[in-house]
Image (cartoon, rainbow, N blue to C red; front, side, top):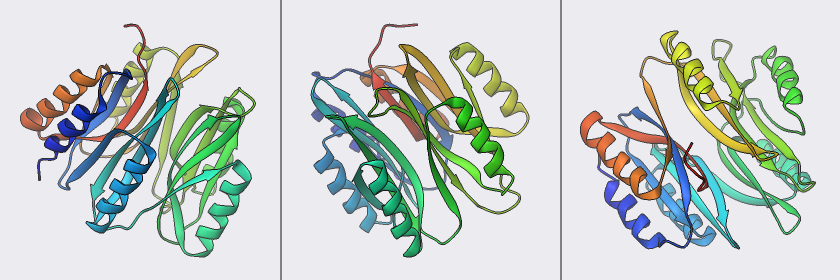
Length: 275
């Protein structure tokens, strides 16, 4: 596997110290190469995506956060010769229209992120070629997510990505992305405001053969919540949470050197006091 840590170090060195963020990540063993973008401007991120796409890297995770007036972007790309299309869409109605248009052109929505700026909602969306059924839902309550999941799972649509974000009305909304990947494919989720409880639940799931593949942290009314998505898998995944920029950089190098594990999923939020 090609070592991409030099790219990570280089990008970190360009980021300066003006913005401080806290980093979390899911690590795992992989046969494919991975590439990363850390704390880039939108234009730089878009250009890197286009360059990596031509080299056969698929964008599998995208994150955004801001410090002060500046917004930054992070990404994870996996080498698997699958073309991925990245779009920035303004407004939910436009997002729904874009999803329908892309589906008609045989593309599947595969990753989504949202944020609000200047009273407007923006959606970062990633599509890959395909024609299988998929749904994107925007819900204003967690109860709505639970009910929606129950209904869609009856149709073998499985939750593959979920985001909590402050919507235009200043309340927390949830984006839930579902895909059909066959009648045997299943995913499961867990949400809690207690991180220790999250870790305990994850340990039980891992013993039962289910691996964490997506980890999200968001705030609601000043309180942190943690969400994990799980699917069956033989390879162990490792969750690392609450790192500074420098420590996360060091962690990535150590994981690669000692355990041959790479970062597969990243979550970023503004730096906070230690738990």
